Image (cartoon, rainbow, N blue to C red; front, side, top):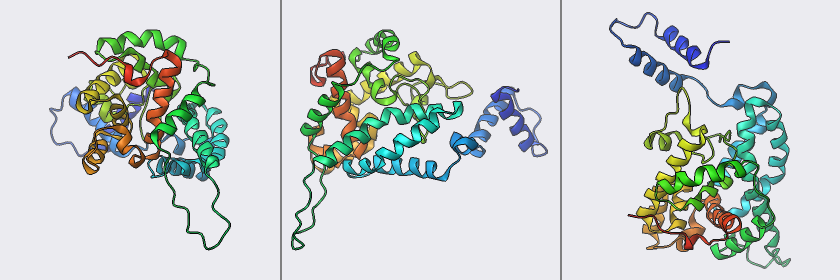
Length: 312
């Protein structure tokens, strides 16, 4: 079987045959052209390429999950819990879709927490004259309490024993608290195969643009799947975010939701802290930050606000 990169190169050459007028193209130009052509013309969604999971219901689930993660209300994620639990074994059963399974497995706790929050909300009064209940998000302190309770019952992920001691020095080398290596539990359950339907990949779920920003290659060999390079890029990004926002909570929110979104909310609400904008962030981010806090507290016995600030 031909190596994947050679197949791509041959496809590019075939697509370009008869159109090249300049015979002085270098090998590096040719390889770069092959990469650009592949990214522009090939469907990289594994779900569409594997008959075993080429089920419209599965694809609809992923689209809905992405939409609800970026939605306004945490409780809306609760409706996806049972479907996720049904889809997960299907994805795990195929080697090609195991990266998606790893990604989904790391997000099941969000759906479980959303379900718990939904159950705890009092039902509306039976009176038909009662005004309709307006959905609200739980305050950040309440979410922190819930996540601490939940994470306390969860064992270490399988890969943590291997990767935590290996990657802590990588974070420390970037002047970032080494305890933040536990970000990988929330992002991927320490499964370096994890890949999201929108393109994030690896232990720390770096998007392609973020990986390239910090010097990682994504083709033909994707360094996001390599623990040390991905940890280094993640640590560098976290340091930049902390330097910008002056808070680990805000830095984590920006890591998950994007720098621009966090900054716009801070400006809109004349805010300076995560708690002031928390309920306005995407549903996933509202849970992401307190979940990371709870994981670090459980695994390291230290609160997020007690982490040593990066050295200047």
